Image 1 (tube, rainbow, N blue to C red):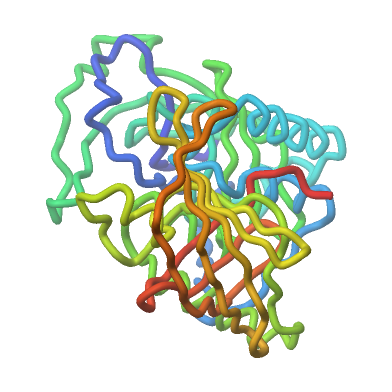
Image 2 (cartoon, helix red, strand yellow; image 1 turned 180 degrees about the horizontal axis):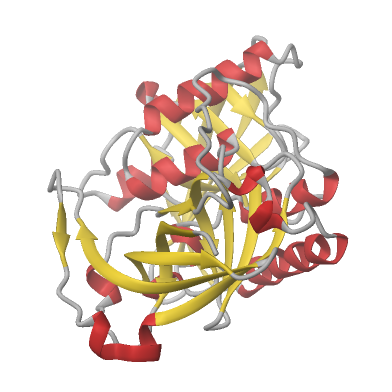
Length: 351
């Protein structure tokens, strides 16, 4: 039986971990080599990663879910689970743990128990073509402000069976870039080897590292694909990230689009909607006119505080040029007011 070392992000009970102090950045999972040592080269050039229609349904369901699943609605979780079940029924590579495609460093992009994910090193072995057995032997914390990991003293040898577990690989894509696993604690994991560029950007936003590089890669990929210029897609778009730190004034942040949701209409109307507190919302509407291949002139001139059926008008206005750098039906990167970069994700159901 082959034995290897793997780094996991798994839920472990009764080990004394405090999820609140664990890093929220995605973890890596290094798969064991099934039978003999092999070298898996990395990919340094920007290229389109191909997925089947069913795989793409899972990727689309995962877009907008932050913190590996920590910030997700019941509807989003249901969409992910349905997509996972479809792939598991279809099946992928037979005997995945015996395939060369499982080798390499895997990025955890979603788990059903994100709050208890911890970086743990384990000795692992392959039981059959589907299951990996492991025993935890080391643990450590990773902090953004430290260049090294801090060992976490856990008496794994005294824990007996509590330090053991298994992972079933329920789906491995034929491209070798997507994997679904289910653990002995009932946890579902979705991992990517070569992360899809949009998901890579969301991962960067979640970790707070490499955001501009991920944006550049996404824009470069779109330009090199030869596709048509992006259009300002209608729908509800939640602001995930912007390149300017918000100010102390929430009204200034709301007016400049640094928070809240943006609603785009086909008739050239645009609305910014921000939840304030106690059911109160800030609403600001205006219109946009296309002035170039990727440029829009946006005028916001009707603002109010909304509480139920009542509204209190505000005398604020804003005018800026919106430049679309990347846009599809789910994700949008733009440059707006004061040359601030924005990343929005679509939150309404696709038509």
